Image (tube, rainbow, N blue to C red; front, side, top):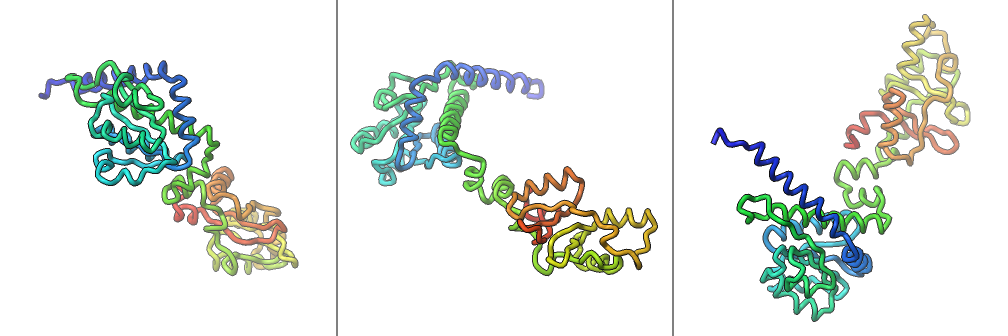
Length: 323
């Protein structure tokens, strides 16, 4: 066993499956267009069904369709014959997957699907099979051989079927104009959802938490405000509460280097005028990009009238799981 060349075996499998996927490109034709049009016109759900390994692939295809803007779910054909067919309505479209095209549990459903007059899309390895001939449109997912040396275990055939499913899902995604924000709404609990949906106003510190001094405040008193609020900065405002500048830890280092007397100097004399301020409605991920580009750890949040609304710290973004 120790002399067996595992790498060579793995490379043969990869090569066979890659060749089969490459051959699939020649079969992308009017049938795929017709299948996509049926699904785009579907007023209900896209029902995916398949037995065994085809069922596992079907489950993945249904999940991919659902997460990319095409409502879909998987129905096990065996269970469909015992009550689950009630989940299918006349407004739906069915995708039935069978490498042979003659899987008994699938074939049993064909008269019922036809009776409901539901559009049927088949994905088979035999365009002359019962399933292919019964379908409104058949997608050819045939392969010359499985990666399995016995040519028995579904390997290459399931890979090609999965790729065909991905091709359908992405074609529909593009046709619908599905956006990254649409995708995020389907994945609100994941890191991608947080990155695409979470806005600065959702996680910023506001109200009394915002460090705030006026231009005439002595530097020593401004440092007390910075220490109390703990963001490494303070906003500087005028009498109308308009943001005119910020003073940060970096500014403090420059003050020390220049030997400025912190007991006598006012914050207005040493602050950074303008500073870096952002809108509360931008994405937290955008704020992070700004922080990284400017090599800072906190940003002031302002409204349209340039009144300071809050402060966003790098730690807030980390806690929110945006990165």
